[in-house]
Amino acid sequence: MASIIFGPGNMHALSVRLRILAAIGTFHYGPFNRGMQRRWKKPVDSARTRLEGRTRDHRLDKLMVQLRNLKLALAVRELISQRRNEYASLQLLSKWRHEVGLNIEIGAFLKKYPHIFQIYMHPVKRNHCCKITQKMTDLIAEEEAVIRENETNIVQRLKKLLMLSTNGTLNMHALWLVRRELGLPDDYRSSMVPKYPHDLYLESPDTLSLVSRDDELAVAKIEEWRKKEYTEKWLAESETKYAFPINFPTGFKIEKGFREKLKNWQRLPYTKPYEKNDLHPIHNVERIEKRIVGILHELLSLTVEKMIPLERLSHFKRVFAMEVNLRELLLKYPGIFYISTKGSAQTVILRESYSKGCPVEPNPVCDLRRKMLDLILSGCHNVGELESAAWLAEEYDQGSCHELQNNMCQVDTANTILELETDSDSTERSVLRSMEELQYQHFCDSQGKSE
View 1 (cartoon, rainbow, N blue to C red):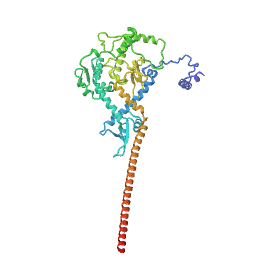
View 2: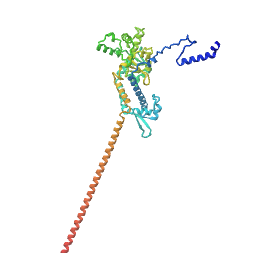
View 3: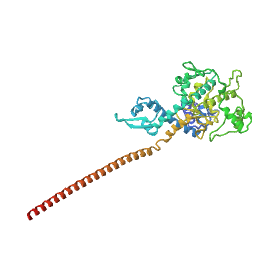
């Protein structure tokens, strides 16, 4: 009997049944598995799971989606501007749409933003072409002019970045990747760096170096906020000397003991970004993390829009001595930084610089980019009004032409009538004159007969 129960066929069927029960999530203990224990799996806690489970800021996410559309429009504009006549056919642009990251047809994308792209029929080739509107062209030219005017501020920004680095050098490729975030012109290497030899110089084709350190610039942006908090809110120096502005997103859950930990962290001293820690090395992990938080805060403060893609931050990890997992570190401080996954890439945003999705302290370059963003947000609005205005102007011109033609016709008719009247008057006069002559001749004949 036992040989039948514990036979190979029955044991195989039992193992198959146990696997099926485990797969569907039900596990019943029986006489043969009474001593078995079900293993409890620990939930995975990683930077990816924390990124997915973080409290989202919907206004900043919406802003990133809008900025992504603006970047795509600027990329298409760059392709069009490379053409000789600054226009391109839709057939040619459709071949290039994957290079700029477009997932839709190029025609549908261009029609979404008529304030930026103008589609027309080529008069000779008779195909649909696209060119940049005058409004967008003026904004881009104005942005380039503002950047040229603020070269001294850009040089100071580069000097501060070089002072943040451990050896006073930066990689030119890393700067090229963040040139738009820093407000640098595209030709900064040839047009700007040689003009300031007392501040910057190229140590090698790939390395930008600092000539001399300027202690007046060695003041972090956060120090202005700390001074304001200390003077206006009458807080103690211990509470503001090493503190950071904290702005949690709406819906953020504060757990028990979190406030006390945050208060202790705000008072924790650390080596500030522009201070060198070679003489006083740090061995405390929390102080090292707080120093990296200060460096990231200063780096984001030096950008134009107070944001930078997370992927491009990795190019500055070694030169700024940030040898940690940046994404995990940024997720630990949701009141200071926010990582948005919307748009084309993960972007780090400085939370204190935005209020309800708008910049708190905009600069001239940021204002111009917001105007470009307004053209994106306008979409097809007001286009019908412009077209109707143009149609009315054309109708008015046509109406005025018709009216002028009618007036000319009336004048011609009046002249004709006058000419006809003049001709009739002259005819009547000649007839009367001839009649008078006949009467006079008849009178003369009668007088002669009577004599």
